[in-house]
Length: 229
Image 1 (tube, rainbow, N blue to C red):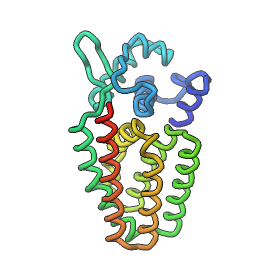
Image 2: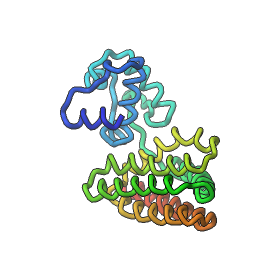
Image 3: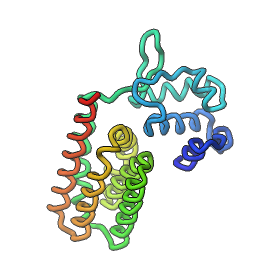
């Protein structure tokens, strides 16, 4: 997905229609990613004709994809305007971070119990990539790596129930993070380093505390960004 989007932003022709997936699923994947990355920012109107032209497809798969992203909360239907990219509000953000708090605290605790040296090395590679992307002001990649980092901690936790609910959640985490990534990225990277240090040390209480502090800081930053708007 990242490769398709980067190619599109670099001016190359999109590959929609050239993959072995139903056309609706291809349109959905790209539409969702463009919303999450801010290519279609909150408040932007998304007409079927405009999206069909953007993706080089007919209106039918666009219409079907719009129904899905509406159900997921990325798009709202506004009378006389049609589909509009949603704007996360204070309630949405509070609810999102309430779930993140419980999920990430448990994941961090379990990861501190179960992580292997290879797991820790993999997390540190993600941190290095995030540092490079932050220094390069590549905030689309920073947002993707932020979600990849947290999903990897959940995977390391070994709790399949956490993993099963995480993928949909972290699309929304990535979306909210991307909106304020320019301000949040340097702080998030430092907090992630501390979390990995506690996981590597096998200190379950410290890992849980680091995860909580990170989510609290991220929530405050997201709400501050919302108030600026």
